[in-house]
Image (cartoon, rainbow over all chains, first blue to last red; front, side, top):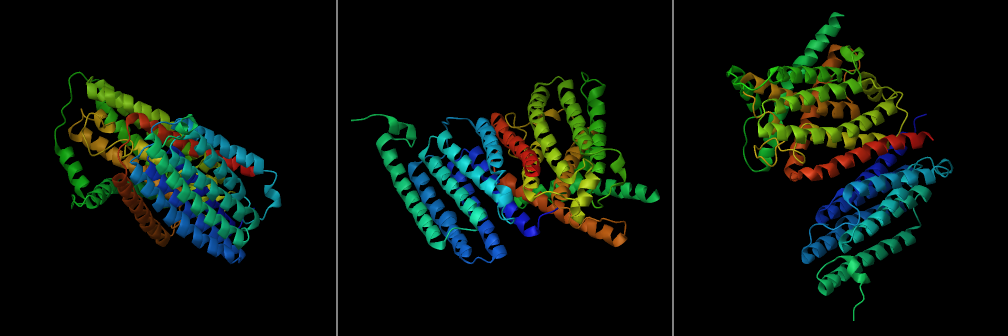
Length: 219
Length: 316
């Protein structure tokens, strides 16, 4: 009846990922959001390492190491620099306030579980529940991008979505081929760099990092 | 039968004796983190002794509620503590009540404390009571849901059964994710209920920040000692609940003296660890504005709800 301890540990890792997602949604301070994202990436790397250890697929180790280096160290540094330069420390204007966001995220998690319900019995036993959590994380990331106006938070939300996708790939197929993962990591890094520069330009042009300004027409 | 009485006596003594120690330990950790030396860990014992020796001053406008409250608060908190497995997984009093009784015994104490805050008719007391009412009304659903999530995974609302099954890894039919969500919710609830930093600041007497302190401003002498002791006890009960429900390992599962000794040692290590953790958390966070507390407790509620949902979705 009880699943083996390895599977339980992988589930625990995925649940920790989901927990940090809620932390990001509930948090107003941008630097704390970045810290939570770094923490989430560390949990992701731990989960991936655990999967690699239990399945004996070696290239997941490389992906986990890259996760630590890029998502837990490099990207948070870039984001911290951006925040420092922009001099914005708080998300003050929100499209949807925190309690409502949390409720919506709760509903999104339930939706993710209901969607994956029919697929779960066909999956591998080891990571069967991580798939649902991965989908939930992607949905929450997507929602956060819509609900927040500051470019920095939207960038963090994008990176959270990427974390969810990585967890999903690990859960569904025990990781993508290494070359694909390397490509994805490079893309994410470049995306974070570009978004950082773009945020700075946004600040210069509008004196604010509110992305709502981008829809205004200007000569 | 005699065994049961001895166990109850030991548990009472352990709870009463370690409650001030935990308070002192948290203060010490905070002081060290602020680069102060801080008072001794045993300072709360000295404070309590001093307060018990002093003559209480009671306002002439108060009713019987004011003088009865410290005793009711102390007794109900201690009763709640006796329902929680502390160092042996099968408490002798487990027939007397389950996890729901525990929640409401703690709520009874809070209720009388709120009444006492209003009773003296001072502005501060009423303000503290109304704030406490806000916090209490929001923690209760979160606490009930997280408790239900834990109870469902063990298939029982009896705390002894839950802890016993988890300690022996038998009959736990679920995965860790509901437990983790419920655990996170319970930690937030514990912080809010015991008046620790992001919600209330136990170290100040500032009008803007205090919740718990405002309610007990009118108390002095032995009444104040009882209220303070009960507050420490409540914190200890929550820490015990968190430690033993989520990580009961090391707790005695039989009546062997050796197992009891290990259980007691493991218990002291676990609660000291949690106390240090609370000290660190309090140093890391600033107190939230009163109207931001809803965000924090909303998070607790959603997490507890998710714990529950995980369980049902998982079952199919």
